[in-house]
Length: 422
Image 1 (tube, helix red, strand yellow):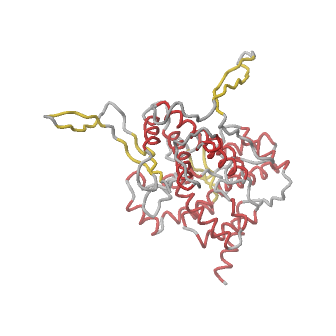
Image 2 (cartoon, helix red, strand yellow):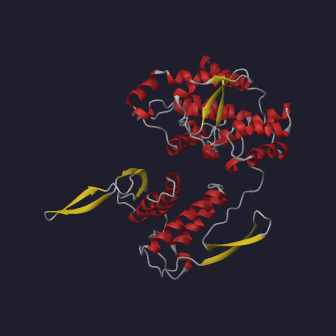
Image 3 (spheres, one colour):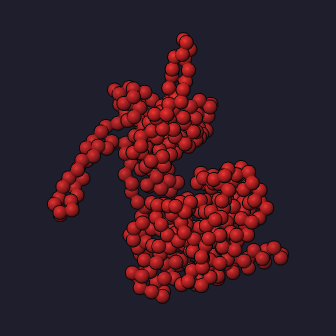
């Protein structure tokens, strides 16, 4: 399969000296750290896509995370190209529409979406990224501009300006674009549902015995502080050391997160993570363990304060956690945990948010509950938080939600201790 790798790009320029061509570092052009590049299974680079990534990365108006996101979609496309039957080249655009490479890939994405293997938003974004690359490739003459790739069409979108007058704007789309059609039923962030209390305990019990201590602690952290994975893998030991006791909630610690703290948050939202005593004790025990200290010893200077380091003493990436999650789902299903078939790490966050909102609504008003949960979960918009209220009010599922953190920890502790005594 194709691979997605990251390189440090240092621009060079040719210079002729005494009849010999030398390549010198070009300081007029900025270098790019972690530039994503795609390589075919044969080891050959996907040159046209890699040039596209470089062009975007060198544009100061484009964030590197945007480049990485686009290349992750193109990586999936490259994987599909290498395994699709019958085989097809990425430049294959015959007169027969059904045989064109993009038409076939669009059909594949829709099938994946309908089979619930891909989220509708991911399906839309993936096809959009592929089309953007092909526009670039056509503009650079990597493929014929006359090739029948798609049909452009203009869409008129009405809107109201700040003065209340109706305006219209136009955008160009294609007949290959995939509409982001949300699945039926009320869902939470990223279209995911929370786990029941029983499933949560089953998962944590299984993970305690069958996955790495790092992944187990990440799952615990997701379930009991509701942080996104990007935040969890950027947790710092210094932040744990500087945590302060929450004056309003007994048994809770506050850890600052956001810009300037070294702990990443989506949309760079500032705030404080609420970490219960029991989880804080587990995290502090882990960071002082021989396993963690061995990894810290070999880590780069800037990574030594990370709570989670891989066995190579490198920072965890979302993709590396995703690989471990694949193994967890496979092993869990084999052990009879069928609910793990479609389990995503982000469901830990949906589970936490549902629990927290349920608890808040039992003791306070909707307005106060939304404000509290919004801060606790680092939501940028209240509308995202309000979905949890709607879910709790309208869902027909019976979701057993614990009253306090301690009860959930005690339930897990009873299971683990009971199994170890057996």
